[in-house]
Amino acid sequence: MSNNTDDLQLASLRSRATAFVIDDLLVTAIILIIFWDNIMAVSHDVNAMMFFMKTDLVMPLIFLKLVYQALFTWYYGATVGKIVVKIKVIDSNSWGRISMFSAVLRSLGRIFSEMFFYVGFLIGFFNDGRKTFHDFTGKTLVVNA
Image (tube, rainbow, N blue to C red; front, side):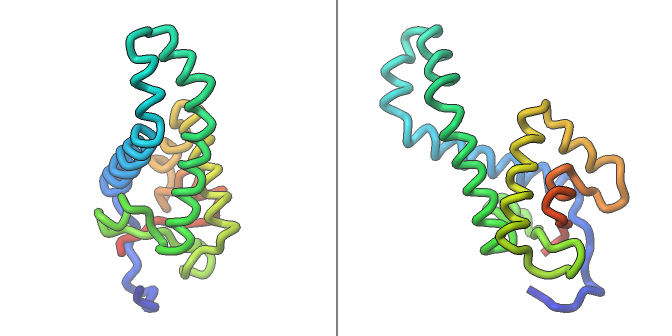
């Protein structure tokens, strides 16, 4: 990571969206692997599948997303998706590495954005810093790596 803040450039919304898709596919694959036997057990019955998804799948999925987002953005400055598209998350005040606290707040903000029809993501289209709700909650910026 370069310490020269003169070279910082905001990540495009397209690269952020691509990273989002990669991360969601990765988390979905992990959940499918973990719960494969349970999914196959109820796959013949749509009602049972819907009940399983609502009762047994939601909390593990939220927990995995929270941990995945928080740990990767804190430790690496980026999730797998962000690493692939060459963008990173930085502290909006110091322009350096984010703290674990900021990473958790950002991760929580991202989950709330998803839960409320992705409105928190749309905020990124309407401000100069391309900051989403989770960027505001974690006090972060997403820049090119």
